[in-house]
Image 1: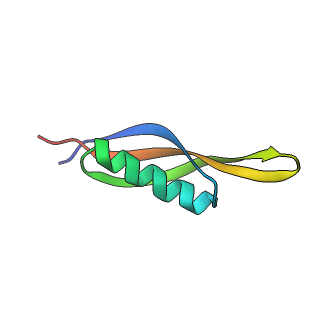
Image 2: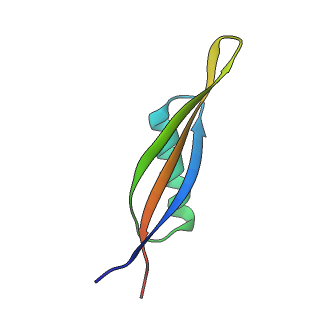
Amino acid sequence: MSVARITEISASSTKSFEDAVHQGIARASQTLKNVEGAWVESQKVIVSNGQITEYRVMMKVTFVLEG
């Protein structure tokens, strides 16, 4: 039997929502062991002078606890 924990993170990118997800998972994996999955809870863009300047995602990341 395994027990998992879920933590919420936000990540951003100047390229795309997909890149923001990749960056968020990469960073979470540096701190959390056994990352098993994630789901994107929401997406948001930052606009400046009528142009999108940043893509942001809120994600819930699942990781399995050791022991």
